[in-house]
Amino acid sequence: QVQLVESGGGSVQAGGSLRLSCAASQYTFSNGCVGWFRHAPGKEREGIATRAKVGSTTYADSVKGRFTISQDNAKNTLYLQMNNLKPEDTAMYYCAASLHISCAYGMSYWGKGTLVTISS
Image (cartoon, rainbow, N blue to C red; front, side, top):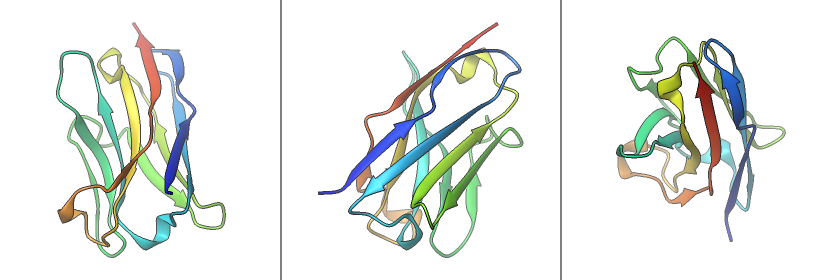
């Protein structure tokens, strides 16, 4: 059974940084499309960074230039480096992964999320 477990969330002031991590069991991040999503109260879930096995990395306009998705294949861990955080970045952040190498088919597996709270 595939499990994705996020960590690294917390509370920081605006302008600060956080790095989220996602560890996987029964899934290898280098084999498929992977990504980070977030869900803020009263808003729809937003895909903020996705990376296909072959192809480009895509960022939401709201985080472009501030967030970076990366992965350590040796540790089978996915990361999201978040810099210059803003209060509007406050949300539950989810790691997700797909059975497909392309991100066009949506995500197959989801973590339970880690909460990020940014104060002004």
